[in-house]
Length: 288
Length: 164
Image (cartoon, rainbow over all chains, first blue to last red; front, side, top):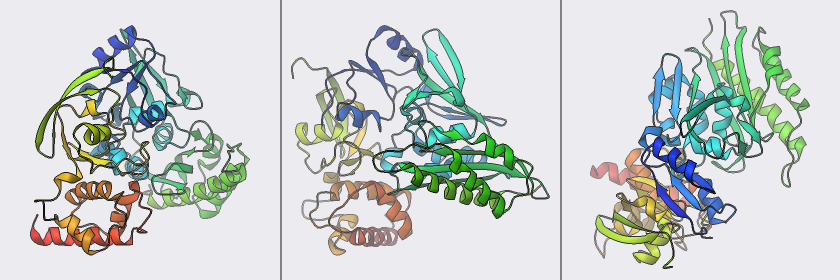
C-alpha cells in the first residue's frame, strides 16, 4: 500500500504548472489528494511525475461579481462550506458539502480535484451541473471554457486534455429567496452516495413554479439533469401530488447497476429522494 | 533507496523543528513513524477511510496516509504525542477518554483524539449529533462509539469551564 516511485514537483503558480505540464510525460496533477492518493497507494495509478498545486495560491479562492460566482480549482471543500458568499448565494452547495466525506477529507479535498476525479456519486460535479456551471482549463499559452453538460466524456473521464489543468469553475447564483434542497442516501455518513438529488426552484406569488433545476447523482456515469421533468414542472402549481408524479416519472430513466445495487433500487431511491427534495425546496422558497 | 526522488523538508512536529530528507512517495504518516519514530500515529487502511492516521497540518485535521511527507515542508504538524502536558499527565481530552471508557484496544484512538482536538477548538459547545458527525471519519470497531461520544461531550464541558 505504498505509491510506486515518482518525481515530485512543487509549483507556486499556474504558469509554472502549465509550463511543466507541457514538458513532461505521464504526469498527474496533485490537488487535495483525497482520491488520487488512495489510487496511488493501491497502485491503480502509477505516474512518472506528480505536480503538486497545493502552493499555487493563484488557483484558490472564491470571487463574487454580481450574480456570478467563480471558485478556484484549488479551493478546499471546507473553505467552500464555510464561505459566507456561497451560503448566501448558493445554499444548496453548503447543504451538500456537509455530506461530502468527513472533516479530515474536506480540509484537503478541492473542488477542482472532485470535478477532475468525476466519481459518478460525487456531489460537487452534480452541484455544478445543477447550476449550469462553466469549467475553465489552462495550458501553456491557451485557455478554454466548457459547459458542465459537456464536461464528462465517460466514466470518471472529464474532457481535460493531457497538457491542460482545470483552473476554475463559475456559475450564476439563483435569485434571493429561491428554494433549494440536497439529499442523498449513503450506507454511512460521508460515504459514497448510492443516489443523490439536488433541486433549485423559484415560485411566483400564486405558488407556480417559475424556474426549476434538478440533478441526480449516482445513477449514471455523470450527473444527470432531468430536463424533461424540469420542463413538465415549469408553470405548474407546486403541490405534494405534483412532486409525487415527478418522482414516479424519474423511474423511466435507465440507471446504473452494479454488484451491490440493482437498477430497481436506484430507481426507488431516485423516485423517493426527488419527491422529498422538491417538497423541501418548495417549502423553503419565498413566494413572489 | 539511494536512487529515489529525495527532497529536503523543514517542518515542526509538536513544536520541535526537524530538517530531514524524504523520498517523495513517503506518506506523512510513514515519515512520522519510521523516520521520526513517532509511532503514536497509526496506519490502518492506508487509503483514507479509517481515520487512524489523522494528524493536524497547520491546525487542520488531515489523513496522514493521503498527505505526502514532502507536502509538510514549512508546515506545523501536531500528533498524539503532543497532547499530554507531561510524561505522567493526560490532557483534558485524553483524561475524558480514560474516565468515559472512550477506548478499548486503542488502535483508532490517536486519530480520534486529533480529530476531536481540531473539532473542539472550532466548536467548543457541540451537540451530541455534531460530535457524531465529526467522528464519522474515524472508524472504531471496539467501542460502538458510545464511550467516545461521552468522552467528547465531557471534554468539551471541562474545556469550557476551564476557559481553555
